[in-house]
Image (cartoon, rainbow, N blue to C red; front, side):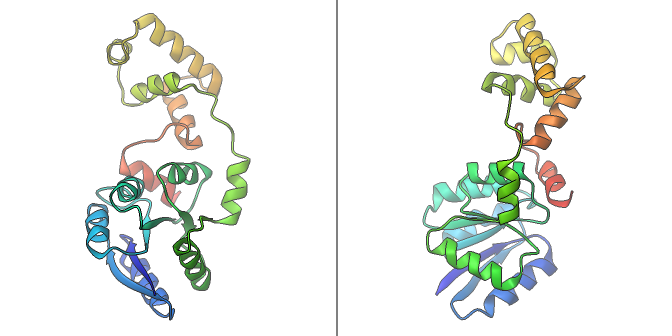
Length: 215
């Protein structure tokens, strides 16, 4: 019997998933939650084989919860759920250790099949999204440029970015100029938007994950 925990903040969606998976003879839903802060504690307590986790949970977002879950309970296989997937979200999910990435409108029998495959040690990804990810534009920014752009995304002025990264103000300006050229932006705000949409720069704000989910 494959034990499953479902973390989804939309009550109707969560209820439907619980009901549908409970109809499978070899799958048992042993817990569910609608808040990100409860994902890891619930999994540690219940120890499910598979955890289906919404990417945009309130509180601790789904990706952060997945990363912590992989550290605290590596035998549990997390699968990220999303309403409307993007290649950027897929790449981020795989980076934090998700064993699967599935859209919420996946047919019930197919979702059950994904659960079985993940429980068996496979990695599952929505086929169409996997193809899209292969054709996604590569990140042109270096790690240092991403640090500078990330600081700029927080609204930090040049002087503060320089102090934070132990750089001179002139060096920070040079980095920002190169970043604008590389991503094809005219302003820092536009560069941040392009980098986030492409998945090169990821926001720590759960509200930004909601943009991916409902876009």
